[in-house]
Image (cartoon, rainbow, N blue to C red; front, top):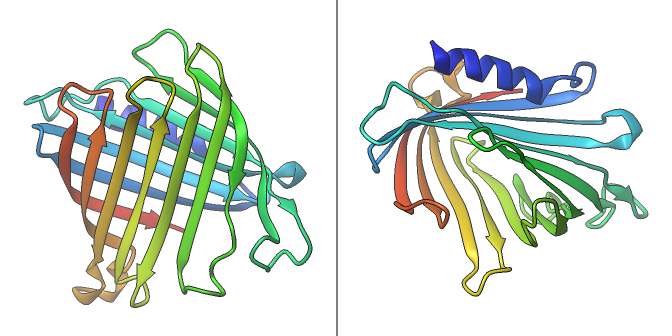
Length: 225
């Protein structure tokens, strides 16, 4: 019950203000090989006021070997504005601009605010159904330091197969801290046409901030348009 209450609350936080825009979302449920379960709600919207876009997600993880007790959520929310440079449908047309991000582990008393730039070039004219972007955050509260991130998505065969993922690098330490997830999914479309937005997924995960850094998740993802 706590899981669904938290996900409903946090999902509402992510999608608030997205009505009358172009929202999208995804829900994921996993078993992780480290003996944990996890749930994620992810979403975003474009064409918000002042030409801004929004992206965010909420993660919840259980403690090891306690699969039915998910803990306080982790939130990441990004608001950004891409500036038009010439034709907006060109490679650099609407790809680059300022971004602000808020990261919050609800176990801690305060979150981290980051300020920087985002770059999302238009690659659709070169490779079908490919999206790549990067964030560079040189400024952060709580002495969190610089963060560089790369993220992307690729669909295959009318999205019967998908690849999705990200990597965040925090280079301020002598040994940079890395957090990365790479998801591969297969659509249920071959089972029943009406389930084309449901995917069986596997996700490779690595997190330098955890004692048990490496794991693989297996589960289900649902896409909302």
